[in-house]
Length: 331
Image (cartoon, rainbow, N blue to C red):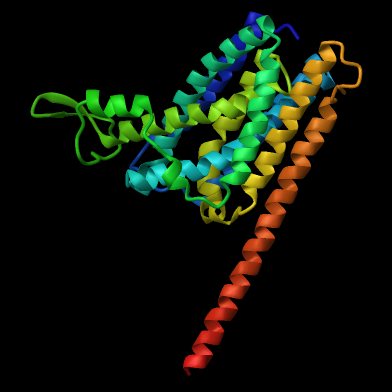
């Protein structure tokens, strides 16, 4: 699908307007915590925007392109839920006050979107020139899927390390020890300094870029159209901040999320390799239709979420029963 320049400009301009409006809402008045009701409204708003965009693609570009967008969007969104665990740990490590967390996430995610745009452009150009990269991406996704299963249940905090950009920022940028309201730059004794809020934003943005190392190859396994890859990433990232506050403690109850994501990544990895073989003339290698990919991704996330919530409910009942029995024994 060939996308005219005006369409790129219109989409990017529209996204920037929505994000600017979102940032204005966050910054107006006194800093305050993001309520579950507000988070629910904005999650619904961004999901609705994505659906409208997908329907528009269906009308203007046909069902195949629309299907690729929805499959890519669901994949990126589901992978982003796993990222929220790490965002939660980063917020805790830096002791970010709850009233400022929504601003940190918004700016950090906006940074990630800009960096992902460059990543997508390079990836699309590389894939068009070097078809063997499909095999590399496929094997990498299968490897990542295996690692997700092997690392299930391990302490996520042990896996988080300060990346090169964050270490450089801490060394190179003069910064205050404490937060100064919601400000990212202040003057102290005539010297301009950054606050820990900027450091956290850099941590969120660059950490999300590291997550793109598996999510970008995953969506390229569904479509090689750079426009679809970028817009699916953009819509998934735009609603990520509100999802963080909406899910809240539910994040800790998604016990089987890693298994679901591993299955999706493994499926897309096998799909990439099979389609690369099919394109190379291997007759037995199947070409997986986009409707099948969309179905596998959607059904996997529904089953994963449902099984996780059932387990959480069962664990809660068993915990309550144990507590009640212990109290009775003491009596």
